[in-house]
Amino acid sequence: MAALILRRLGATLVLLFVVSLLIFAGCEILPGDVAQVALGQFATEENVQALRVQMGLDRPAPVRYLEWLAGVVQGDWGTSIVTRNSVSSMLSERIANTAMLAGLTTIIAVPLAILLGLAMAMRRGSTVDRATSVVILGLSATPEFLIATLGVLLFAVHLGWLPAVAYLSPGADIADTLRALLLPTLTLVIVVTAQISRMTRAIIANILNEPYIEMAALKGIPHHRVVAYHALLNAIGPIANVVALNVAYLVSGIVVVETVFAYPGLAQLMIDAVQSRDMPVIQACAMIFCATYVLLVLLADIIAQACDPRAKAAGRAVAQTGLSNPAEAQ
Image (cartoon, rainbow, N blue to C red; front, top):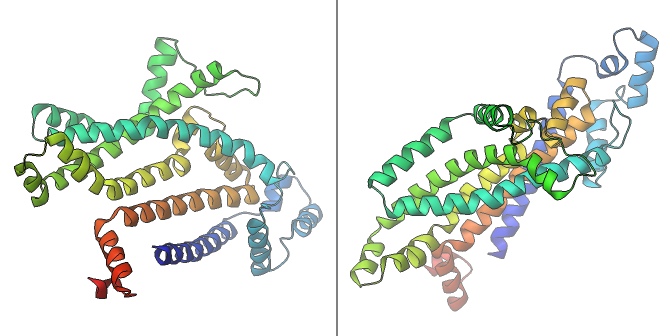
């Protein structure tokens, strides 16, 4: 298992290096002049050239990439072109806001989705299962902006219960913060719950059709114990992958939700940076999004391998026989 984790970590580092290269290259090939955009259309050519030199844009791209990568490794994301502030200080508050929204959604959506998918799988083929599947499939196909817009129209405009804009004031108490977070969280919970519960239902239903499940039932083991100790435990690996992908979506794919509610998160910061061509901020946000996605997939992969009964059996055989190759042990 340790060798597997080391191999996955090595592959992840190589992948992150490739991702950093693509992000830097993608920002380099964007049309327009960053210095010209920063100074405005009425800036003189001398001022634009002076800003290029000040920003280091007159140097070769490989040199600037290596300097940027060295700074990223040390936690230095550079300086914003627009605000002249440290990118790290700009990221800290936005990362906390995005993490709070994603964390709150995960705490609510993941247990709810797994329980819902499990209940549907245990009653597969019934009227309740078919009706719930239709509703969940419809919610899965509904885009986030439509759910968010309908939520704003109903709860903010028509009923007036919740604010339409998720503004987080620095001195707000926890009640006001939760009230501001309620609509964006509800939108994300609906989307994520629909995705995870649909996949959980399919995974559990497939496992319940396996012969060893039928054998356990024939031995007289109660149905709830068969589901809990045989089906659910074997489904942890696949479900972990589904949960990891959806949590990665929460961190890197909530651009639409943050835009609709004007939520001051990392995605909103990246949108503002793209509009002002603030390259250091764009590169930092893109790198954080990609790194989060890759690390969550790595975590899900390790959990899936750790929960795989075949890997466990091979590991026990290796320990008993002293063989280094699991295939030989089997």
